[in-house]
Every structure is written in C-alpha cells, then in structure tokens.
Length: 382
Ligand code: PMP
Image 1 (cartoon, rainbow, N blue to C red):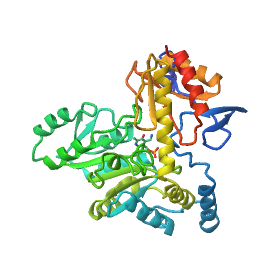
Image 2 (cartoon, helix red, strand yellow):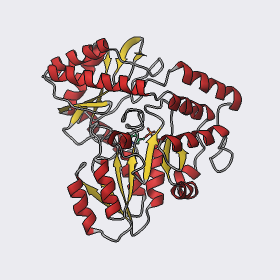
Image 3 (cartoon, helix red, strand yellow):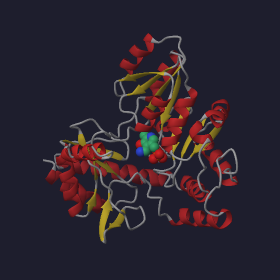
C-alpha cells in the first residue's frame, strides 16, 4: 500500500459522509458585502461583528504603525517582539476588562492552549463545559490535570461534579458566548460555584467582547458582575476586527503566564500593524455600534420566527439547526446562489446530525439585507 493511501481513504470517507471541507477565496475586504469569483455576496458568516476589518479609522492607524514600525515583529515577546504598541494594547485591555494586567498572545487558540496547560498541573482538576471551543479542549489535552466534562451550561451537573473533587486545586472553564450555539454561560452561578469550591474561574470572551453588555464589555457587563471571573480570556480577531488573543487577570496570574505559557514564550509576537489595528478596534467599540448590532440580531430573530423558523439569541450568533449534514450544505449552497453567504457547520465542529446554518450578524447589515436572508431561509427551512 502506498504511504499516503490511508490519507486518501480518510478524505474519501469524509466526502462520502458530507464532512469534506473546502475554502472560498474572497477577493475583497472582510465586510458585510464581499466578492468571491467576481460575484457579490452579503456576508452573514463573519465574526467581524462590528464590521471593523475594513474601517477607515482602523486602517489609518494600521498604516501609521506600518510606516513607523515596519511589518514583522522580528522575535518573541520576551526577546525583541515587544513594541510600545504591544505595551499600550495590554494596558488598554486591562482597563477595558477592569483587571490589574493583561497579556496578548498571537491568537485566541494559542491563548487557551497556553493558559490552560500552564495554570494547571498534575493532580489538579479541570471542569469544562461539553460545548467549549476546540482551543479550550486542546488546552485541556495539553494539561497534565484530570479533565471533568460537565453538561452544557448545567450548573447543577457542575456542582455535583465539584462535590466529588473537594479540596483539589482546579479550574472551571467555559465559553462566555458558545461559538456554534450563540447562547450565554450562566456566569453568576459559575463564579459562585468556583468561589464556594475554591476553584479558579475562566471565561472565553471570544464572541462576547464587543457584543454583550451595553458597552460591549462582555459577559460580565451583560450580567452586571464586572470583575467576577478570575481569568478573562478573549480574542482580537472577532468584534475587534484584528487578530490575536488575550488574558486579563490579576498581576500574579499575568506574570505567571509571561513566564510559563509556552505558546506565549516560544512564538514570534504579532506584527505592530496587527497590534495597532487592535488598539484602533477597541476605540471603535462604542455603545452605538453595539446597540446597532443588537438591533440587527433582534430584527433577524423576529423575521425568522415570523417565517416559521424558531430561533433565539442574545449574541451575534444565530444557529438554524438543520440536522442532516448534506441538507445543511445544500441550503448553504442555495443561499450562495441567491447572493447570501451563510456557513453550514458540521461535525466535528458540532455533534453528528446537528449540522446547522450559523448566521452571524454585523452592526452594519441593513434591514433590507436581513429581510432578504430571513425570507429565503424561511422558504428553504420549512
Ligand atoms: N475561543 C472561541 C470561543 C472561539 O470561537 C475561537 C475562534 N473561533 C477561539 C477561541 C480562537 O480564537 P482565534 O481565532 O483568535 O484563534
């Protein structure tokens, strides 16, 4: 048998099960309207919730940084890769999340992997929601701690499991907004349980920063419990419109991460241009933009419910559950034909037979664009 046959066999199996993945090549900036292969689409699949990737002010700031600092950062953060911009971004993030300190990683994925594997050790326990993002799962896999999975956002189940591990050091970790379902963690209860059972609490604010709370500060603002979690992790790659990941916490945790998190220490730091875009993106997270996004979410949910498609969301992610993988792909392809880009999400990102259209909104979508999408989905999903 040829050395690569097994990979070809696996790819064939994926094709047969409608799980094979391909990429669309976008020929324009990431915004609410994009071009693919010369054809225009309204984009309802991006995580750029506040439409900042192509914002004039953000681009001006990025250009200024490009002229001053050049392109690459030339080293890891602990060698030559920390510019005044990196320092400024960390100060801004700590202020935003009302914490003593912040630390920026190259991506959100690297943040979760680096943080979870470094703050837990052999003999510790990690309690993780069953629907947590893959980067949290991989952080748990890299850690030497024991892993306990609790039912999705089920605080009764979490408490039952916490009772079994009293006295052990550990971490409870959860998405703030769940990336494929768009629902929100029961943070007040999670934090109370963490304190009661002496565990660290950590939330992943990838889809909450710039989205939840009147000022877009995230899940803690949504519940009015700012400063409650021990560790707030987030990404700069979604509402902020740039790239990178971060942690906000007290000085001790952040200093510990600077010294111990391998994905922070052993990788070249982000380009100053990316960092400048992130700082400018933070400037643009205003109550007005966040309110416009929320208004669009409400509008789409109302239109879909009217069209007989049951949905509910307080975040910018609205899943329409289809079930069958091929059917989800077919509906997504139909929507593409009509000029609407909506991703079909399948296993292993979600459980088998729970394939879905994952609609994401931007603050800049027009009501007409949203209505057009809702009408089509109503027609295809009945
Ligand atoms: N956490 C969650 C909940 C996410 O959805 C994602 C990205 N999809 C990440 C972390 C990783 O972030 P990044 O894309 O910046 O690596």
